[in-house]
Image (cartoon, rainbow, N blue to C red):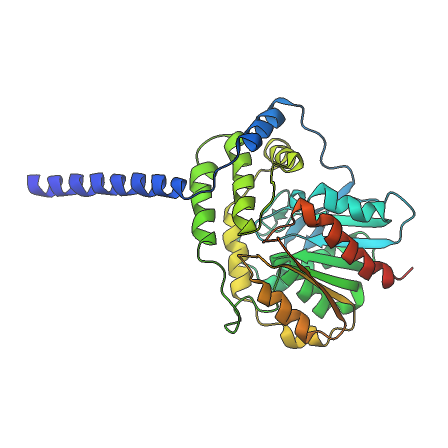
Length: 346
């Protein structure tokens, strides 16, 4: 009996040691934040939080979900509507304000919304925990219906690009154009390069270091570390005050961050079928944008998708990873406006 107890104690001690070792190893592998970034985060924590929601808000009912959205009016005479679809585990506030303002300044109403499992979007059916990308593609349609908008331009990034592709394929009459950014027509296409093997371990390590322990400041730091990881080999300054402000706003005035949503979104992507054939039949204008340093969905995915679409234009961006870098927002938004202005239905 005593020997059995000693064995149990030894196993427990070794398990604790292993957990501690893995925690410190994980923390060591996470990119470091600059002193400038840390100082800026401290400053944002001390200042009053600016209002991040300035448009008309509401909920659309989609397949047992209450989808929260915000409609931001144009600054000049309205030309049309753009609906933005964010990537996995991200909510409406993940869109850079400078990106949105490019379109509202140009005369477009911009709609952004919280994905299932993020932000203020709520599940109505508590038993309905799993869903496919095809289900998520019904969410922007439900929002347009709720706002009585017959047609819109749709812009999606990463998983949001996949959702936007499916929404356009299944409801082409509701969209005037499709812009797919850092996305893929088949994320598991074996003929194309795989994601960098370093990204997922680093993302998980960052969550262990900043997302589980610590307060609001640590969770704000996590947003910057994740952005740095997603940049891959791209270079640039990520000391972004709007990112820190949006993170703090999310933590204090909204429902914070839900890490489990990332796993649910991953499952939805894993069950998705290839869309190359359906994309090749689209008649609406399509714009494919991809960063050449993307470590998550390699650049070749964007190139292959563009190669199968008939009515397509493309923008291949140097020094861009799996994010929307501040330095490239002007070029990206200008290209998108060239497409949608040329095909906008008055």
